[in-house]
Length: 144
Image (cartoon, helix red, strand yellow):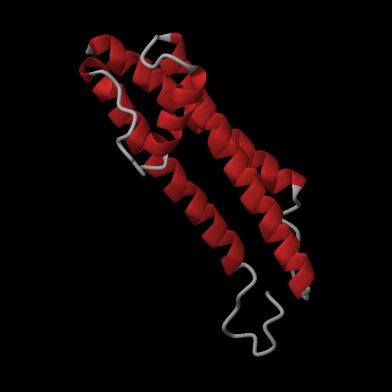
């Protein structure tokens, strides 16, 4: 149990680091700090699409991290099963068609909690970005 808690804690730290790097890179690379005044519908759509792809790629990398751990430790027999299990656990879908052995359920639960947090963080990031395009005091809806 303590080994899983330690391993899970390390995986959580690496997951958060990946998310920080992806979102920080996105802010810099996508020029999210620049003024978005008078942004066209097309440019807003393209920007939000790029951010969505970036965020989903970050989540996929994080899922690969967790699934690699499960596969390496022999929790599940193939990487494909480990990836699928990790994806439905991280996203808290939990179909239940693939389950870990009973002695591995603790770390699987840790992945689910981490996935909830990372998805909420991504949602908050997306909300903050979208809110930059909406200013209720501006009757023309051109941004700030």
